[in-house]
Structure formats: structure tokens, C-alpha cells
Length: 115
Length: 115
Image 1 (cartoon, rainbow over the protein chains, first blue to last red):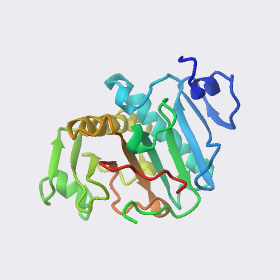
Image 2 (image 1 turned 30 degrees about the horizontal axis):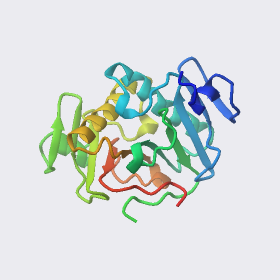
Image 3 (image 1 turned 60 degrees about the vertical axis):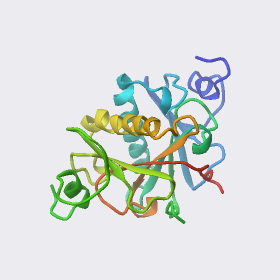
Image 4 (image 1 turned 180 degrees about the vertical axis):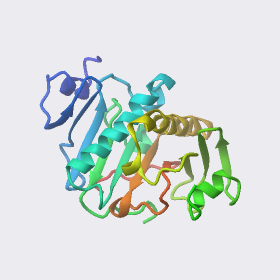
């Protein structure tokens, strides 16, 4: 793990976070600056800087991030009302932590893109 | 395929779209109401209403949507500047077509969630 990766530290239990799920492949925790009533980050335990650096062999892991976010949406009781899953990549995408993380955002009606 | 699914019709060549990629698992085409200079929808050929209805056996396919969107970002020359990948689910998420589609949005600096 890179020494300066805050998400690697959270996954390793070396930095605090409000963990909601953890197994040998994925860790999920609440965003510390939530953009909505439900805002959870679903993160692969394996360090990958961004989607740009993912390999074809990571496909199943990336898909599991989506399915885990879906499961967490159900746990939070927002699956019927709906939610948004977002991966930000690079400067234009607004990526701030360079360890892949899927945002689960829910609990309010989210704006459509073109607004 | 459901009779009324516009994305199934596009995949089957029965409705028009500006296709940018097609193989036996995935079809990608330009959003007809783009929210940014690059706005491509990456769609599984298999009909799945939304992420809520995906199964664990769909994990690899879902991950391949992400990797294909990344490849298309590279083709469009926006991978370095960055991009956003979005899955909308249900009413709060702003989902309007009920066939899973991953939005690739790029070509301008995208707003952070909390703005």
C-alpha cells in the first residue's frame, strides 16, 4: 500500500472511519463530508489509483463494488426511492482521493445532470 | 427483451443511436441529450432493469461496463483530464430508462457533489 493513501490506512485499521461493511475484498464507510443523507464510499481493499489504472482482471471486483453499494442501499432502506452510484476520475471528474471509491448517494432527490 | 425498452431496440438495431462500440456483451452510444461535451451511455446487451435487479453473476459484466467506459474516455482523449461514471437507480437517482446504463461524462470540469 502507498504510505500516503488514507483509504489504505482506513482499510488497514490505521485511520478512523465509520465502517459499514468489510470483507476480504471490499470496505465501505460513511463519507466524512456527506453530500446527502446517505453517502457511503465503497472501496476495493486492493489499492488502485483510479479507474484509469484498473485492469481487465479487476472487472469482477469493480462489479462487486456496484453490487455491494446496491446491498447497502437496501440496508439503508433507500433502494426503492433510488440512489446514485458515482466514480470520479481525475481533475475534471472531481477525484480527490486516488484510491478507487464508488460513491453511494441517496436520501434526497438528486439533480439531473443537465440542471 | 421487453417490447417497450428503447435500449433493447437500439442494441437490436431497431432504433437509431450514434453507436460508438458494440460487442456481444456491451453496446455504447452517445446520449441524445448530452450533459457535457462527452456523454456516452455504456449498456449491457442483456436487459436488466436497474442495479437493484442485478445478480452476483452479473458482477463481471458490470465491471466490464466500467472498463469499457474507461477505454472510451481514452479514445475520446479525456482520460487524463478526467471524467465521471454514473449509474442512476430509481426516482431519487434520476433513472429515466429502465435498462442499466453507465453514463460516461467528460469534457468539462464537473461540479463536486456538495455544490
